[in-house]
Structures are given as C-alpha cells and as structure tokens.
Image (tube, rainbow, N blue to C red; front, side, top):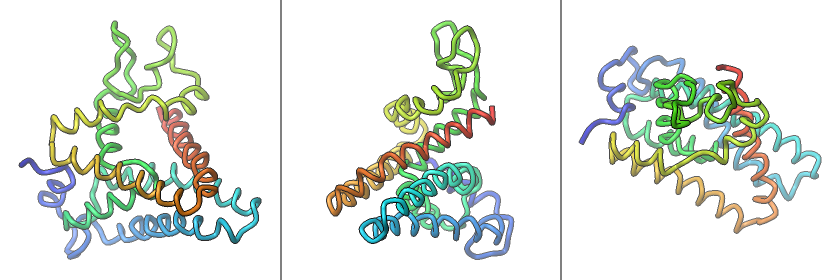
Length: 222
C-alpha cells in the first residue's frame, strides 16, 4: 500500500531530535493553537444557553474568522509539513482539525495540491481548469471572477465526488480516511443539533461564513 504524503514526510525528512515532532519543537505552538480552537468550538455549544445572544454573536464571528485563520495557518502548514513523527498522531490531529473547521483535512490537501498544479490557471477551450478553485474558472472574458461571487459561491461549488475520485486514484487508503473525516465532522454537527437544534441553526451560518472568509483570503493571495 503506498504511503500517504504525511507518512512519507515523517519517514524521509526528520529535522529535529524530538521524539514527538517531525520537524521542529516550535510546532508545539500550532498544535496547541489547534487544541484551543477545538476547545473553543465545543465551548460555544456549552455557552450557548448561558450567554446572551449579543455575546454569542460575537463568539460566532470569532469562530468564523478562526476557521480562515486555521485553514491558512495551522492546517496549511500541517498538510505540507505534518507535525508529528507518529503516523497515528498525524491521523488523530487531522481528524481533530476536520471536526474543528468542519471539512476533511485530507480532502483539503487534495484540493490544495491540485491548486499548486494549476496555480489559478485560466479555463481551457472546454471551460475547465487544472486548479479546481481557480479565481478565473467562473470569470468572464478571461478575467478573474468578482471577489464577492467567488467568496460566497465557491463553498457551494465544491465537488467532493471529484476530490474522492482523485484521492482514490492516488491512494485508496487516504480516500477512505477522507470520507471518515467528512463523516466525523458531519456526525459531530448532527449530534450537536440533536442535543440543541437552536444551537446548530445558530452555528451553521457562522461555519459557512468562516469558509467564505477562507475563499476571500485565497482570492486576494492570487
């Protein structure tokens, strides 16, 4: 069975004598930040019936911003340079991140690597791009799409089937774990909704907005 990118990175290029971290002990900082972000995610659920609405709105906006911050900080660094020597720890951390930001880290890695291949390329004669999230894909006359359209519509353009097919072609084992991560975060949201349906109705718009902010960030980086 071929190794995942995370596993091969750990085996081939250790850069520190730490028994836990694969590259540098400073990675304890983003790992701690991820744990705090996860605690914040579940903490909002605990606070929801105990904090006035205006307070929860502030906490929700912070959660939205933190999704984009996590994706472009903790998560982005993790998919390029897995933090741990242990494949098990990397797997558990990936699942934790998937639940926290509400999207599979393995799927994100596949989408991001496809982005590196295409590098925001323009559509070909068939209207297709190598980069699935290219800012030019849905633009007109070879120009980039309007930033507001890209920001708020890209979330609904994600195609998990295409990502899964690509993952399965490269590594069926990673494709399985990608689905597991998706199921994990969806199950978490469903359980929260069963426990308090008012809360999940409150959370979903902020979750969506957080991913919109991530697309907005990506738009102006390209």
